[in-house]
Image (cartoon, rainbow, N blue to C red; front, side):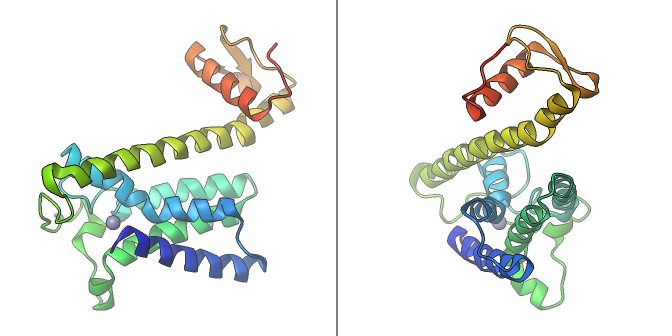
Length: 215
Ligand SMILES: [Zn+2]
């Protein structure tokens, strides 16, 4: 299934879910989360398989339930604990729709594809060079570049979100203020962060709260 087909199916499913669950239209943020969820397996597995050759095909690893389910559980617990359960469910719906979309013919026949159970089942044979690779694998390189860009932006937002919902709460509850970027500091629960993490954390915090300066 092509990326735009995965996206279309995920958007329709997330739209239906949010209308039924919340009686409102999904926000732009939720649609962005649905976009990432609908593409994530390919964004990670295609470059790992075709560009770096570290997994056997671009249809295993993040495409496989033994990897996907723990990712879903972590996200559901995180969004539930941060009081945004619909966000987690929307992501899981979008992600799961990708796996179903890749295997819908076999699933419709009542079969469970081996790739869904990898590494506990051998992967299905798949061409080493995909049909869409183009001359000198140019399309593979473009997909890798696009994947890195999307994953970098996604990672930034995940770090920002954790910063907003967990680290800042610790600061607020403990009364401990931000540390100078050059020092190590203790925040709530007596967690000690190394200097590098502190720098990144403080930069993110300053970016997200421009009106608040450093100590
Ligand atoms: Zn896929």
